[in-house]
Length: 96
Image (tube, rainbow, N blue to C red; front, side, top):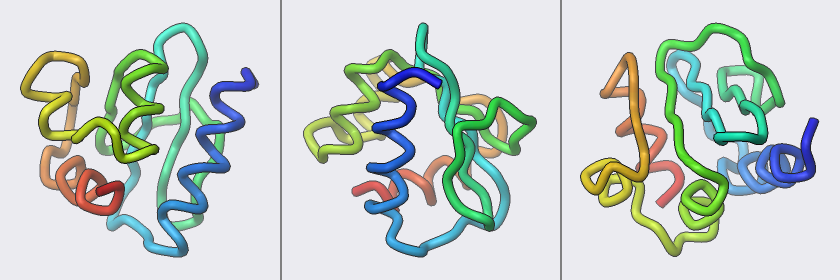
């Protein structure tokens, strides 16, 4: 696991503060690895997911730190989403 993924797992765990999703989401950080979020928490896992979000490390860092709005990142092409859009929107609201 890369240092970027390890830091993202820690940051997401703290940011979600026990909130959970009704499904699973995977965040693919280009060139670094993947993070999976589901009812059991946040892990560095590249398994199947209902929703897959893909971006570069800078975009994910910005979203986690509140500097980048997930909706804006999606609309400007910095964030790609595949699968369950409703789940992606719920995750975006949890990150805001």
